[in-house]
Length: 114
Image (cartoon, rainbow, N blue to C red):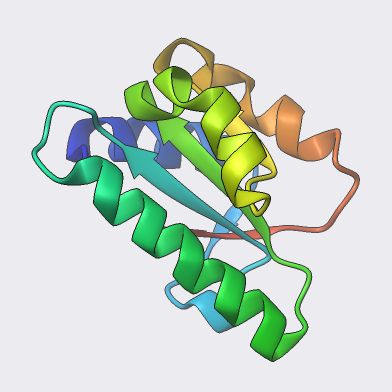
């Protein structure tokens, strides 16, 4: 939703040695980059999270889910309580912490970004 932030996030993760993949089936973690400015953005995120929940159930796959951006910051409590599929929530000021946050999860990760 925010191409500039997505490029920044991708650059940070790539420079930390994380591998990006183009499809959900190959990914170990998926990031949803949010933007509260765009109309309908919140609904898109909730719908995407429901799709990810269904995918995880169907595939019985351990897929970590991260919601990033200004909307993630604003809806932090709601994302954790309501959806129960979100593992990482990071606002724009903490993008540089993503490699450390991911590494602290102690999993081998290939990242898919939507």
